[in-house]
Image 1: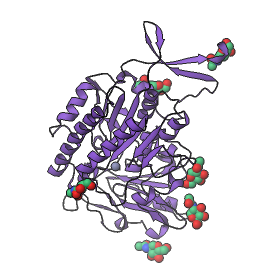
Image 2: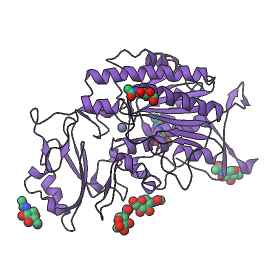
Image 3: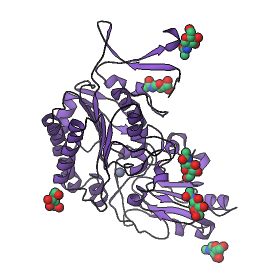
Image 4: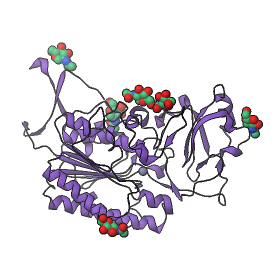
Length: 422
Ligand SMILES: *[C@@H]1O[C@H](CO)[C@@H](O)[C@H](O)[C@H]1NC(C)=O
Ligand SMILES: *[C@@H]1O[C@H](CO)[C@@H](O)[C@H](O)[C@H]1NC(C)=O
Ligand SMILES: *[C@@H]1O[C@H](CO)[C@@H](O)[C@H](O)[C@H]1NC(C)=O
Ligand SMILES: *[C@@H]1O[C@H](CO)[C@@H](O)[C@H](O)[C@H]1NC(C)=O
Ligand SMILES: *[C@@H]1O[C@H](CO)[C@@H](O)[C@H](O)[C@H]1NC(C)=O
Ligand SMILES: *[C@@H]1O[C@H](CO)[C@@H](O)[C@H](O)[C@H]1NC(C)=O
Ligand SMILES: [Zn+2]
């Protein structure tokens, strides 16, 4: 993204050739964790269908690698690939002390999140807007000492499935928009991810949870109406990643590293394994080649890469936090260390080119065209779209407005004024 420090960028629309000053539009970004792009195809979803009729539906969107919750959500908030924003895993770790922290505890490791990239809340606030966040990953941290005007961090052991709580959280956020005059809020729901993991993406339980999501989409839009926000509020609903079915040793040959001939765990000083399909390793000094050679090609459904040789489309190389060896499996398989300890029926974390890893995308509101189906785009592009709707100057990011601009009512071009000409 180009930034011209000496240029003043105005966001304007034109009627009959005259610039019109408009009231600033509001924006609600919602994530339903793990809502795969095609989850509405085998379930009746009247509210999502209605939203598509009144707004924009993308065929699917492509998340960044690695396709797990914290990295992909931080991409939504920053428009940066994971290697550029630094939240490279759900787990914080220290290769020296061998310490690891789980997903929830890592929310509170400030230096893990605040690694040089500002989420949209902070960028918006620095430009005079008011931002909020409810339960969105990254909310617990501060960024260069700043936090959004209003925030609510998810409690530990939160009941992700309780529909009453979903309604309460929705009304709370609508109240923030109306009573505290917020311009932007990010809102997170932990489903249908949990149900997809536990029962698998093809299960009846997942379909029932998609119905609950659909009812909630209806509730969200009704709540916006009741709070008098419909005219000014844009709503983007998307997710962080998809979900795919995992098979067990009865159906396939599991990938267990300790069983691979020539691979020896004592050549590795630190590893992140047994976390779905993805893994990373730090070999002992002088052991990188030996570890790499032993693992590469050891199983037809195991991918092993040296950090600097990672496929380019994954954008998962240029960060000191990424360990020297990266591993991932094909859909259907998970990566086991010493022996299988994972029993989820659904997983994510795979290559972002896999269709099962793609989330859904919907948008409605005064900025968006109606009844428009658009092709796929990468989720890095949602950030510049959001900045555009809010009328703020984006920070450096990896997205482009041109990927989503055709969704907008007015193909609004930034009016770049060269101040030295005024
Ligand atoms: C890891 O722990 C060591 C020893 O306490 C410390 O010196 C180092 O700064 C830590 N590294 C990170 C990235 O936290
Ligand atoms: C990002 O984190 C790494 C350690 O993981 C640290 O070395 C680096 O200084 C941090 N950068 C910023 C800008 O915070
Ligand atoms: C859901 O949350 C509501 C509001 O806190 C609570 O009254 C209700 O008991 C919860 N339901 C379940 C099934 O836990
Ligand atoms: C693994 O390496 C350790 C330490 O070098 C050695 O003692 C052990 O015999 C090796 N195991 C195998 C199966 O080669
Ligand atoms: C958007 O612009 C960028 C940079 O100019 C370009 O690389 C990209 O191909 C464009 N994308 C589309 C969808 O036009
Ligand atoms: C702004 O205008 C000045 C004077 O015409 C010109 O020299 C300069 O290159 C322009 N800057 C940009 C970024 O177009
Ligand atoms: Zn997730």
